[in-house]
Image 1 (cartoon, rainbow, N blue to C red):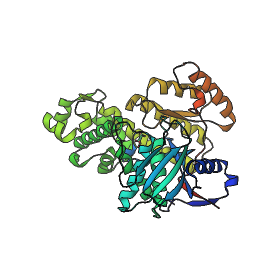
Image 2: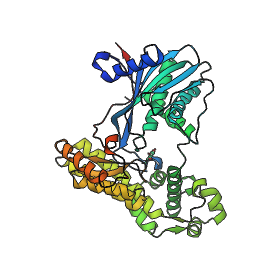
Image 3: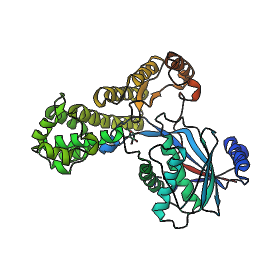
Image 4: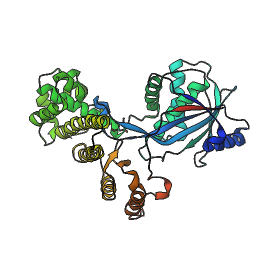
Amino acid sequence: MATDAPSTLRVQLVEQPRLQKLKEMFLSKFGTAPEFYVRAPGRVNLIGEHIDYCGYAVLPMAIEQDILIAVKPVKSQVVQLANTNSSYLDFSTNVNNIQINKTKPQWHNYFLCGLKGIQEHFGLNNPTGMNCLLDGTIPPSSGLSSSSALVCCAGLVTLKANGKTLSKVELAEICTKSERYIGTEGGGMDQSISFLAEEGTLLAKSKGLDWKNMLRLHDVQTGLGVSLAEMLTVVEAELHPEPYSREEISECLGISLEELRSQVLTQNTQDVSTFKLYQRAKHVYSEAARVLQFKKICNEAPADAIQLLGELMNQSHISCREMYECSCPELDRLVDICLQFGAIGSRLTGAGWGGCTVSMVPTDKLNTFMKNVKKAYYQSDVQRLAPENNSLFATKPGSGALVFVEA
Ligand code: GLA
């Protein structure tokens, strides 16, 4: 249950080669054995893109690839961080002087986000120091949330090292906020949030709602008290596919251009001159409906469930590409190749504009699928990432964050 604290498992290290190896490396690095280990998985979003911040449910799945950290609390107030991958340099700092570099964040800055989040939550005056050795298996920069997994792992490490407890929900909330220390909210994502919020506000005005208090498209649906299918009809009736100019928007809202700039547009959209309100709203409401359908199919498991789920994933990709415009030629090409070689559904996942795709592939076709996709996508262009760097992999739904102690 989500209200529970993350589990602690007692394990025999002889049965856990990865933990055993990490313990040996820890011993040779720090001269003592770790006291406990924490793992946090990466994740992939199966369906529901760019709708979480509009107030709608999404369907992410934890992957098997993770961040694993071996930890030994120490008496000094120093945190020493090391990584099994030698390209990530050692780092150490005093726990009372956490500085997070936003401009050129290195791996340890993500650890510090989780550390700081927990310290601040409990107002820890005398936080413990610790030695930590990290081993990561999530391909970096691939849109699989390796940085979030590191923040979450560090949050749980700090919690445990300081003898505190929190529920998984509380931990998730703290780690979401603390990742902002590194400026994760900045960039393309922010713009999308602001953009959609404004779309909601428009629609709301046209239907006679109090649009100034509506920040998300979900608020408009709730305000109107209609279904997602009906919201799509509202979009068709109230918005036009041609992009809206600033002038047209201010006219619709009955406010001046200056009021639009200062009261409606956020910092990130100050310079935007046209707004594709129809397309963005259509994506959000149709994607939210697809998530509900996906969940219903999983619950009811009809005979053709797999085909239906695949079809929803494909529709999601088309909507991301055409309506939300968060795909790119490489993602479209990869999706096409995956479908060509046996995926039942395939789509971009995560923020988009690069990143990665997720495909649903029958187990008996997996080997040929992997071989053919590697060949068709990677070997056709020497510029692409080499396939041996784990950028193409199979995964089943993995478990959430855990603590391990040696039995
Ligand atoms: C990023 C964000 C998520 C979500 C996706 C798009 O990955 O971190 O919260 O908004 O983009 O679905």
